[in-house]
Length: 228
Image 1 (cartoon, rainbow, N blue to C red):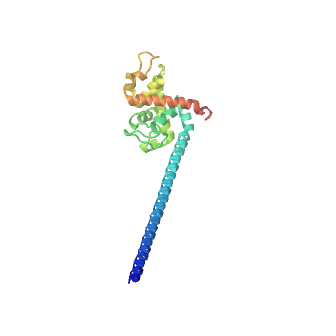
Image 2: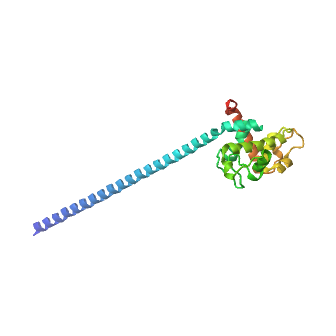
């Protein structure tokens, strides 16, 4: 009888070990499966991040390339119009940079249109009356050549108005941005006086400063004299 009980006890222990081994195997298999799933998920995640980063880099590169192309696309027009209308080409290009970042289809919140953000009610109307020419529609002002011609003429007229002042360019830019009445109120008492301290509109002061800084940059980096 004892021998039989011993055999039964041994069988139960053996069965228990097998069950324990089976359970451990199941746990190991589950852990391996979990680890594989996590690895696959991480690989997919990294792949998606790589793809998104690649798309972002491509878009950024494309945007930079498009901007560089636009920034030089109108150079010959700028030089020709500047010479016709008495505007120093680096200054004219700086105005276009500030007004539209060389986007010929740009529209402003107050109705400004095109590369030089000309206003149909002021610059365009004055140009039409002076030259007895008609601009058929606002859409026509998105034509780069026409837009630069009108804008440079309008700016050239302002430069001529303030030519006796040392800060003629600043006053002309004030007029282009904020109107002739404000430019009149900001002119210095003496012709050799400074304009910037008199400008009491922050956005106009920044406008003038940004353009003059960009003008200086173009003056040194842009070989506009070689363009015909």
